[in-house]
Image (cartoon, rainbow, N blue to C red; front, side, top):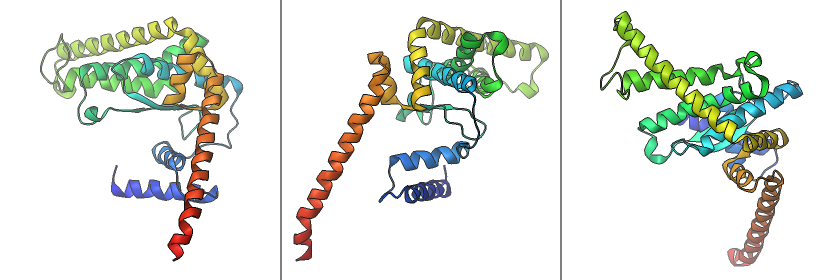
Amino acid sequence: MTGADISNIVNQAALRAAKLNKQRVDQDDLEYALDKAKMGPELKSRIRSESELRNTAHHEAGHALVAYYTPAAHTIYKATIRQRGPALGHVSLIPEKESEQSLSKAQIISMMDVSMGGRVAEELLLGKEHVSTGASSDINNATESAYKLVCMYGMSEKLGLMTYDMQHLSQETKRAVEIEVKKLLEKSYEKAKEMIVSKSYEHKLLAEALLRYETLTMDEIKILLDSKDINSIENMRLHTQQQKILQKSELEKLKDALAPGLLC
């Protein structure tokens, strides 16, 4: 991200804060601006059917569930079913600091597993014959990761420690690469399916929470899956709001106490 990109995001956040009559830009404004820059404006005018919302909720819950329970996966930042641009929803992940410049084989495979979670969730909800095209970008991302693992990083046990340029390979070698990539993708699909089936209650709980609240943070996902109580999210939000009000009140008191001294 360039300096100009960051400047644009900050400006968008400031505009939103002003629109909402806020005295200062907060984290919510910055998140809104970042999402807008990455995926486009939120499409509030488009009316979405109940079936589309339910399908999207199950799809994103599939991604979130696999990411949450896969040790090597990046940490979830938030999951949402709010539509932005062509995306009907998304799950944002944050890489660990040491993963920003390089990735382990386990992390690359975990990214493929998470990508498959949405497609698996749709199949389990609707059946294979009724899945949507919504998983196309997920499959594309997983395929790209699999090719990089085999062709760029030399992490394939079968094809060994070398790189492969698909434009300059014999038909036999190209076929061997494609077989290896397909095997990796099928394995990720099966792992995602096994996890979602074995944790079907947690998956359903996540989907219902997304339908009710639209957006969930990592802390909210954690408390939901730990407590198995969908109302725990509302309780957490009320507690957070009360803490913010208390902090604001304390800050105002401190300003009043300091004011006379500042005037002297």
